[in-house]
Amino acid sequence: MTSASFSSTLTLPASVCDQAAQHLEQAARRTVDGAGIPLKAFRAAADSDYTFPVAVVEQAAACLLVLATETAQTVRPSALRATISVALSLRDAAQAVNRPALTTRFW
Image 1 (tube, one colour):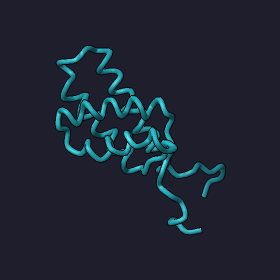
Image 2: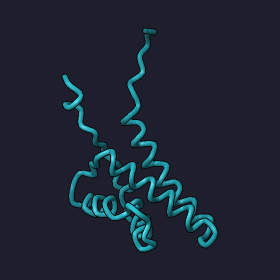
Image 3: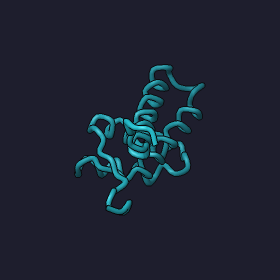
Image 4: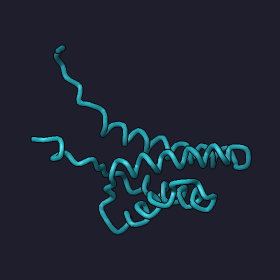
């Protein structure tokens, strides 16, 4: 098999997708650079199987972290924690796909 046979997509839980879409809408309203593409993807996910390209998930995570940084002084701590939690969930999911498989033997 070649590396092209491995698609760089991942499937997320519906609850994470819904939360991400809500936070990405806030990011788009605040004109966070790059929020438009992941926002469209997460909005459309409700009509699909919640599978996303890894790059879109990484972009969404980055946008949400920027949103958290920009709003840290103006939102309730619980809202800030929610935004950061979703961003880190997305980032961790994307990193898990990119992480090489662990082997049990030394090379």
